[in-house]
Image (tube, rainbow, N blue to C red; front, side, top):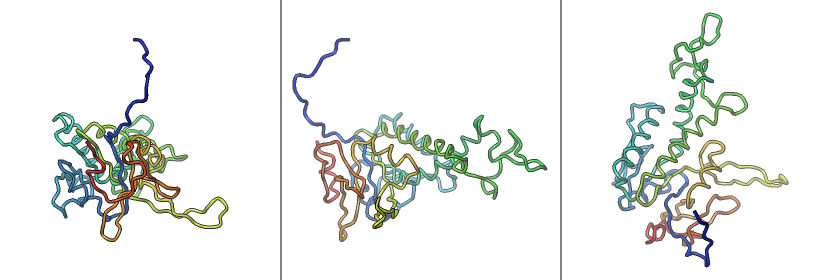
Length: 261
């Protein structure tokens, strides 16, 4: 196949096929999503039940492993049905991140490496390899995150990335991943003051991996009762966009200005 080099610059791309929106709890994220036409809200926290919304919620009697399996079935069904919704929002990915700690734990327990993890112990207190699992409610049941040197975090990270990659193909126009914000005071380099960078409420490396994989990331906030979104990122606030019309945008969360024809 011949390589053809461009003769002139192409037109800037205004397509936004994936977005991360993050903000404090109850700032108006779910209510705003409910006003986006033909948007399916996959409501992991049952917040959409308080507003008129096109939404679906996981079975409340399922644990985190069951809810993660349910979410995978939802994603596959959306794709199998031909992506009937223009927009799909996972509200919130932060909750999915919490499920992933325990679904990742379960996968590790069923792996070769984890054949002794969370197993019933013998009379000497030694885990019985390939023996019965401890009950999830057992005081000795551990998270995969407890494995030394941070090795276990990749098991939960892979769970979140599987969901992320699955749902990126689940909508006609855009998939919106909603996250909570994590405020954490840290000292400046010279230790003269404390600053509070606002970052995604996700575990470990996911905070850095996911923003690189979406078209835009915006901080949602409530300004005297008006829901706004900031795609302009600053030193203390994550943000940014590839689409030209969103670069530097910091105004009312108006879907017609975010998704332009």
